[in-house]
Each structure stands twice: as structure tokens, then as C-alpha cells.
Image 1 (tube, rainbow, N blue to C red):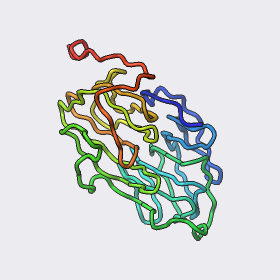
Image 2 (tube, rainbow, N blue to C red; image 1 turned 60 degrees about the horizontal axis):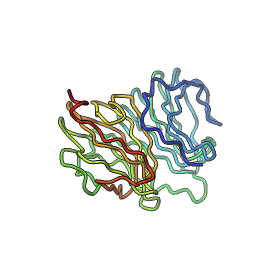
Image 3 (tube, rainbow, N blue to C red; image 1 turned 90 degrees about the horizontal axis):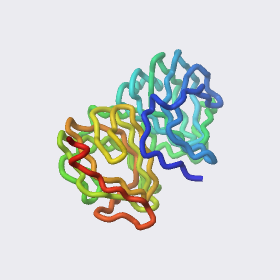
Image 4 (cartoon, rainbow, N blue to C red; image 1 turned 120 degrees about the horizontal axis):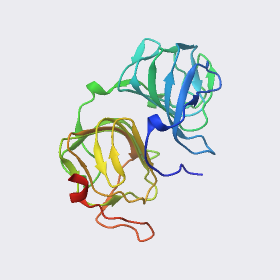
Length: 262
């Protein structure tokens, strides 16, 4: 069962519940932003409310982490604010710890569990391990979405050519606008977690902490930012986008720009 379409929610409005990962100490809270209930593929906003320490070991699934506040330490490496990590299934990581008052996007590919170990699981793809990638030192580059308007750039965090998926940071200049409706192919989903700025859309204004997850073929209307926009994004590779018309089996309500901007 795929994840449900979330056009957008404010993460602070999502109910907090205890964060439970088999094999790891308790003591954190999570807000589940979206999830596939069958596989456990999910995006969560986890807040560690006390220090956590764990021995070396590996996870039973691929895991992406993006720190919003605080610090995660893996061996001698630190994941601070706006730092990204990718831990492939079965790759043994060094002893790690999380400080109190750390908040991160936690994105396991299935229901996660942690196995204490000092070596990789046989067949683990260590060559794809990204232990710590600080976004501040990643250069800006042009967007990779064909036809995406000028005024936006990206910082690429990870590209998975086999799964045809990508993770990046999207930055848009003040007064950036998307002037037509767009949608993505059936196999290309898209999710955003807003870090800074705002973006006015037909569904409302995205502000820091807002989250959305769209499956393919879901049209999204014109958008505009007066102040600029900075977002954590996961989508396809290539992240194909089609413009100017909407599949007939979806509802479409044209956006009244004059009404929204008055």
C-alpha cells in the first residue's frame, strides 16, 4: 500500500508518540508525517528528549537522516544542523550517540530495527554509505528538473541511480514563481519539508515546518514566494515534470492570483 497523499500539513499539528526502534534505547518522541503502513517506509520528525547512546551495529533497512537541530555523533563524525546522512541496509556504523534536544527527519525504507555488531551484514553496500554531509559546504547547482523556472537552485545530498530517486535541498530566490500547473509521472513521488521562508500555493502557504508528500500524477498549481524558500526535498531521478495541462481524472481549481496576492 503506498503512502497517502499529503498535500501539506504543519508538522507541529501532528500528534507526538513515543519513538520505538527495536534494538535502540527509548527516550524520544516522534511525529509520523507520512508512512506506508505495510512496509514501514516513512518520514518522521523525531525529537530526542534525553541523551541516547548505542554500540556499533547496523540497521535492517536503508535509512536517511537530516538533522534540523542539535547533534548526532557517529564515531568521530558529527551530524549538526542541516547535515545529512545515509546508512545503507546492513552497513555497520561505529558507536553512536544523540544529544538531548536534537530534532531530525528520520526516513527508514521499512520498519527499522538495529542489530549490534562490529561488522557489516554480508552483501551490505558500504560504497553508498554517507556518514555525514554538511549542506553548508555543498555547492549550489542548477536544478535538474527539466523546465523548472529560473530563480531556483539545488544542493544535491544523494542520488540513487538504481532506484531512480534523489534527495536535495531546494533554494528559491525572493519573487520566484511557477506560473503553470505541473505534475510528475506515475512513478515519481515528491516530498518537501520546509526549512525557511514561505511559498504560496493553491492549497495554502507553506511555512517552516510544513510537510507534503505527493504521489505521481497529482497536479499542483502555480506557486510564488515573496521572501524566498528553502526546503528539504526527496523525489525522482530524473525528477521529470510536465506543465500546462492536468490529467482529466483529477480535479483542478485554477488559482486566482489576484485574489491570493491582494
